Figure 1 (spheres, rainbow, N blue to C red):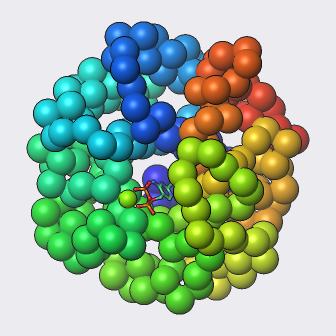
Figure 2 (figure 1 turned 90 degrees about the horizontal axis):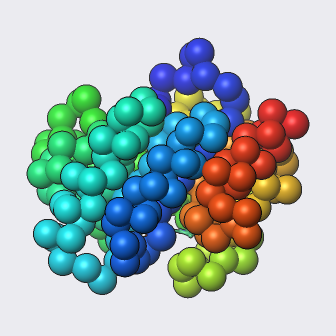
Length: 214
Ligand SMILES: Cc1ncc(COP(=O)(O)OP(=O)(O)O)c(N)n1
Ligand SMILES: Cc1ncsc1CCOP(=O)(O)O
Ligand SMILES: [Mg+2]
């Protein structure tokens, strides 16, 4: 994900729902979503479950991603990303340091870092060796209680001053995609807009991709 030389300016990054009650059914939805259009990355973001559940979900979902040449990241836990042989980890500000995750994961795996609405946190993450930084929330979301609201200018400034890709997250609907892309986002991260789309995840991916192609 960090080498965007031959990639379109802004790509879709999918975040799983925080609970996956039926792994078989979700695997089918994931397969449909990834077959519908280009997706750069899928992040397994399970909350309030034990490690075995995360590893089981990773073992089921990662091959689907790899069949589509889509990177598979695990949220919160570098140790589980290593145990699952995932492509990387997404770390929040309370999920451990980039340095310690890098020691665990080596240089071949991706490390992304939540930076809320803060250029300062993004510089810190970049200096520590993050492969991407994530800004948000850009819009209202029911997926997570958020305390920070990012604006488009942050994306533009970040894009101007660094080479490190940035992800925009939080309540992103298809109609927001082009604006975020034009402002400088390299990825838009979406959860409910895809898995909760009234026409299903495949139709959702098509809508986001069409909007990005604008
Ligand atoms: C791409 C991306 N950006 C931000 C987050 C949020 O991470 P974090 O702040 O650790 O919150 P949780 O997702 O762990 O609730 C993310 N997961 N992915
Ligand atoms: C994990 C996370 N971090 C900031 S907003 C958010 C939720 C993203 O989900 P949605 O696309 O449903 O708003
Ligand atoms: Mg986290």
